[in-house]
Each structure stands twice: as C-alpha cells, then as structure tokens.
Image 1 (cartoon, rainbow, N blue to C red):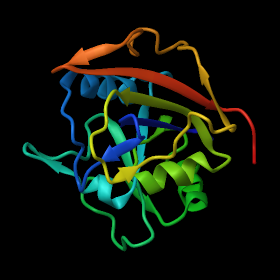
Image 2: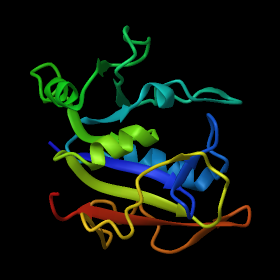
Image 3: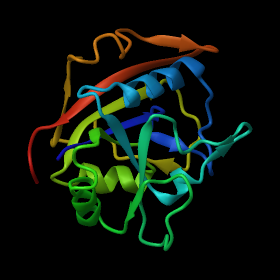
Image 4: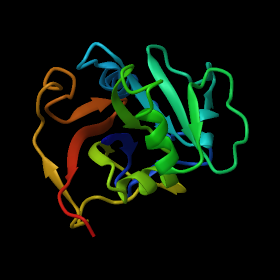
Length: 192
C-alpha cells in the first residue's frame, strides 16, 4: 500500500498559521479537489488526516468530510469516530490494516494524506510513503505549522508529471491574487 501526500506550503514549507491556511486561492483548491477525487479504478479515493485537519473550519463551515471520498482519521487522542468519518486508527500500522481489510480494500482507489504537519512527517518517514504532490506557494506567510522539507532530503527526488494526472496538475507557475504557485512532485527513492 502506498499513501500519497498532497499539500500546499510556502517557501519555508509552512502549511498553516494557527488553525488555518494563510492563503486563499480558489484555483489551487480546485486542483486539490480534482486531484484527490480522480478515480483510476472506478473506486472512491480515501483521505487520511489527523484530528486537527478533520476539525478545520472556514467561514463557510467545516472542511471535512469532502464529497465522493472516504475520510480516515489518524489520531492517538481521539476516542470516538466523528460523524461523517469512515474510519479511525491510532497508529499507521492500524490504519494500513484498516484500509487493507476486507471491509475497505475493494472500495478504495488511491489513498491521499492531507495532513497536518505531524501526519505528513509520520507518513513520509514510513515505508508506505508514495508520491508527494506539493504545491509550493511563493513567499513567506509567517506559518507556525510546517511539513517536512523535501528539497535537500536525500530520500526524495523531484519527478516529472506523469499519467494519469497530466490533465489535472498545472504544467507551469500559476498566479492568483498576485501569489504565484507551482506543483512539484516528489518520490521516495531510498530507505534510511
């Protein structure tokens, strides 16, 4: 099983300030929605997230669950499955066992890790780490929550865009509200 990560970060690999992302870019968010919902097998994709990511809210209300995806929470502190979530685990091994169980393995297409910072690190350090789709947002947004830096990490290498996402991932630098962003793809190349 491979768990792919999808994230947006600033130049310092910051992903949030407090409980929110300090940027609002509709086109980048639409890319995230398309990417996590593209079905390669006719089955719904699954999102894995920590408790804080599950509880995120915007001015429009809760951000999870997202439609047409299964939501799984990875948390050592959560004791009860929240309404709308499909499953919960307290360790990565327990999560993988759940996703590969007879109840889920034939229902799930791809699995995407959507954060937060500790969940990104946990999965990136694991044998289950797949590709990382990192939207790099130009600038310093004074974040206080970070994901692991992949540039300079010898375990990861940038890779070219590949099928089946050729029509989903933007090719070039995009700009919204004067903010530039580009999707970089990383793949784990060595174990440490």
